Every structure is written in C-alpha cells, then in structure tokens.
Length: 117
Image (cartoon, rainbow, N blue to C red; front, side, top):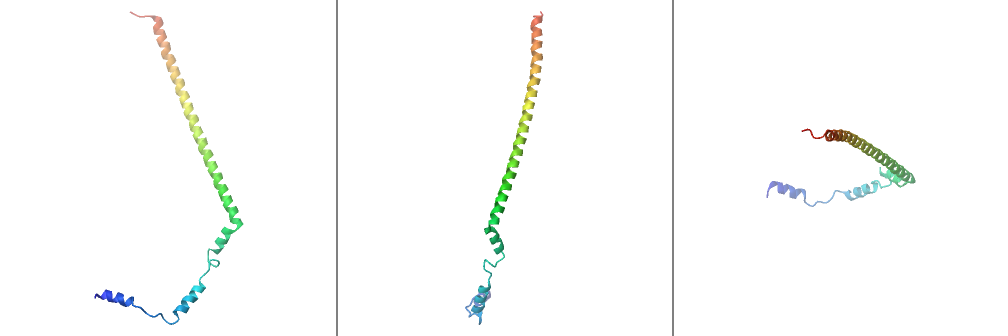
C-alpha cells in the first residue's frame, strides 16, 4: 500500500469521541441564537409592522410618480420632434411650390411667344 493511502486510512479510522464531547455539543446547540435573538430579528419585526406597509406604499407611489414624469417628458420630446418634422415638411413644400410656379411661368412664357422658327 502507498504511504498516502496508509495515512488516509489512519486518519479515517473509527475513534471514540473525547470525554464530554456530547455534552459540549448539546450545550452549544442550546446557546445558538434563535430567530428572535438573531441580528435580523429587528428587521423581521420592522417588515411585519404596519409601518412597513406605509413605507412600501410610499415607495410604490414615488416610483409611479417618477415613471409618470419620465413618460410625460418622453411624450413631450416625441411631440416636439413631430412638430419639427412637420415644420420641415411644410418648408420643403413651400420651396417646391415656389420652384414649380417659376417653372410653370417659364413654360407659359415659352408657349405665348410661339414657335420660333
């Protein structure tokens, strides 16, 4: 057998526990903090209190208010972009109308002067 296997076998060999081991384990189990005395007990009491419900309701109301403001600003921004696009289209149509009127007048002048042969 290899030396490491012998060491492992020796380490895992059955042994009797030291004197008073069971009593020490039971004493430690009895002194463990219960959920009421643990560090999270005040937090648990706060969450279960009616005050927590009011805090949660206030946070929810604030979140809804912020969401509404963000949505409203987004809608305003979209509306402003739409108005700007509309203004650009109207300007382009006016420019096109002016150019078409100039072209129409030139065509009419050519028609009035008759064929030039």
